[in-house]
Each structure stands twice: as C-alpha cells, then as structure tokens.
Image (cartoon, rainbow, N blue to C red; front, side, top):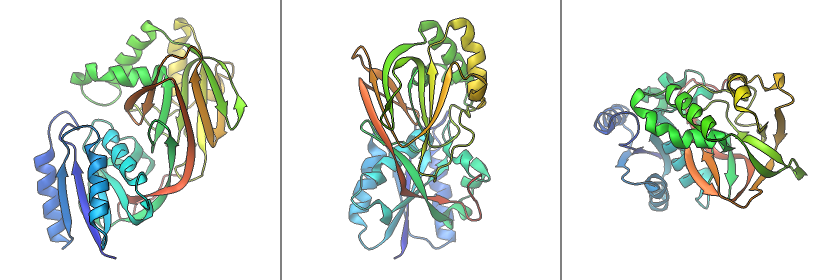
Amino acid sequence: MEKRHIFIINPAAGRRDLSAAVVRDAEAACRRLSLPYDIYLTSHPGHAAEIVRRTAERLTDAEPVFYACGGDGTLCEVANGVASLEDPSRCAFTSYPIGTGNDYIKMFEGGKDAFLDLDRLLTGEAIPVDVIASDCGDSLNILSVGLDAQVSMRKDRYRFLGGGIVPYALSAVESVIRGIGCAYHVEVDGKAFDDEYTLIFVGNGRYYGGGFCPVPDSKLDDGRLEVLLVKKVTRRRAAGLVMKYKNGRYSELPDLITHIPAREIRVYARDGADMCINIDGEIVESSHISMRVEPGRLRFVLPRGAKTIV
C-alpha cells in the first residue's frame, strides 16, 4: 500500500511561527522525492488529533504517515489521534521538531538534527513503541502527578526567557515556595504505596523538561514503565533532591525516592481534590488517574539510518 505523508503543523509551537518555512520545506522535499503529501495547520487544542482521525477515515487505500510539526505536546496529540483509531497499525507517525520542547526524540540517534533532515525522515522506517494509556489521555514519553506537573503548568510564564531548562528551573522555584507535598493513594501492579509525596513520576521515555533524565535506563519498547515515588520533602532538602532526581541518581536517596518497574499504576488524591497531572507537557486536572503500558501499540518513524539509543 502506498504511503501518503501528512504534515500537521502547529503554528503556536516554538518561540515564533515557523509554519510558512515548514510548508515550504515539506513541499520541496516531497516533490523532490516524488511523494504524495498533504499539509494541515492546527488552529485550536485537539485539532491535531481531529486531523489524524479524519485523514485516516478518508485514506482507505493508502497508509497515512503523520508528521507532528511542533513540540512534545503536538507529538502527543498526534499520537493520541492515532491511538484512538480502530486499527492504529495501519498508520505511522513521527516528529518534525520545531517546538521549544522535543524530549521524546532524544531517545534516538542524532536527536533533533536527524529528525529535521526531511530527506532522511521521509524515507525512514517505522518501529513499534510502547504507550502509557490512561483514563486522562495517552502519553508517549512521561506522565507525572504533583510538583512536576505544577512546574510544567507554570513554566509558560517564563517562556520569554527562551527554551531549554531555564523556564523549568524558575517554575520549580515558584512551585517549591507554594508547597511540595500531598497525600496520595498509589497502587503499583496492585500493591499499595500510600504516603505523602512531592512527586509521582511514570516514565516510558528518559528525558523531559529540557534537561531532566530521571530514569536513564528506561526503554520505549520493553513493555514496562519506570515509576519514581518521591516522598514529601522539606524546602531545605528540595534543592539537593532536584539535582539528583534530574540526573537519574535516585538510588542515592533511598529514603526519599522509591523506584518500581511497573505495568499498571493508579493514583488518587486522598482528600478527593483534583490533582495536577502532566501528560507529555499537557496539563489535565482530575482527582484520580489509572494508567497502564500498552506494548508496541503504535508505529513511530525514525529517520533513515537512525536507531534507538541503548
């Protein structure tokens, strides 16, 4: 079945609108390689997933390959659109990274530069990748509850300072000042871990937040998730905790951080209040969330010659 290359561009991604340049480059590359293509621009939250679903319904005689032109949020939205299809295996998707945060693709050789090479990306091959499926939305990379999600929610007010880790660092300071612990009911593969936690982290990938790598051994295709339960800490201990957490040195803090490989996780706020939940950089609020790993559910296209980093 012939592939059709579908570019979904988020004009709001990055620090300035790059949509005109992406349209120009995508058209030139597809014409140069004699590939059929379509280009869409998103106009509102959820639009990328809508485009995926409509396009998949229309293209019954071709294999759609979706290019999420934006950051991790755009990529997650495209992935959610593919995951919602009756048969996700007939489609593939990938990242054309023009956003301020492009952490998922750091799991692959060449990183951002490789995915910006359209000749390689358009002629790449798809590999199966795991998904974190939850009742609040699916995630490709990470899902977190607590301080981490609050930091992600507040970081946009510091966006004028640029991308990378600076907005996250300033947002982290603000979030620590506001409060760093709540009581949760947590179940990991059926075992209870009720306690007061600063952060509950669930990783499929390794990187997020422009420079955090809390689970350096995580893999995208091993059928398991990496859970970190970070106990409530004092403000005085928070700075030292953040640096070790950021660099994946959780084993040095066994009294504060519990690491658990898992397949299913449930989290409830003990007081029944809505929790702040980070799903690949997108924030949702709910008093509970249930999630599980779905091994190899989606097909992700790598640039020609690229491989997953071991």
